[in-house]
Length: 109
Image 1 (cartoon, one colour):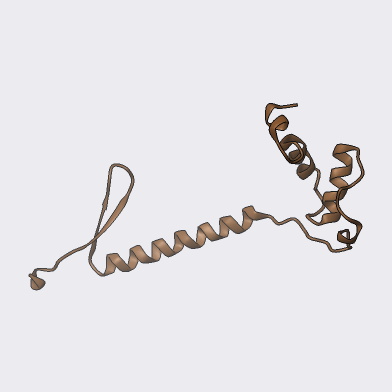
Image 2 (image 1 turned 120 degrees about the vertical axis):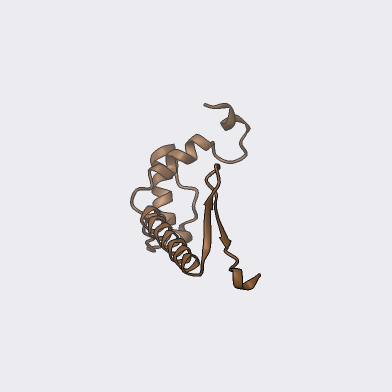
């Protein structure tokens, strides 16, 4: 038992992590109840009324996060192209920051 488990008012953190890792089929109350019983070897703590037949599939966050990152990268690239066409100057700082500065034309002076 870890020190953090002794000071916790909820089930020990290590136990909660083991329960969550055993929830391989879904994220419903039923899945949690089954994982809880497997890890603790005790009767479930969830009331029977909550244990319906609803199924909540586990999400694959990685694929969604990657597509969002690709979209943001593409939007930055499109913005850079538009700024370049509109005569912006691009300077890269030593820290890696990319500065986009509008070029003042001689006619505007």
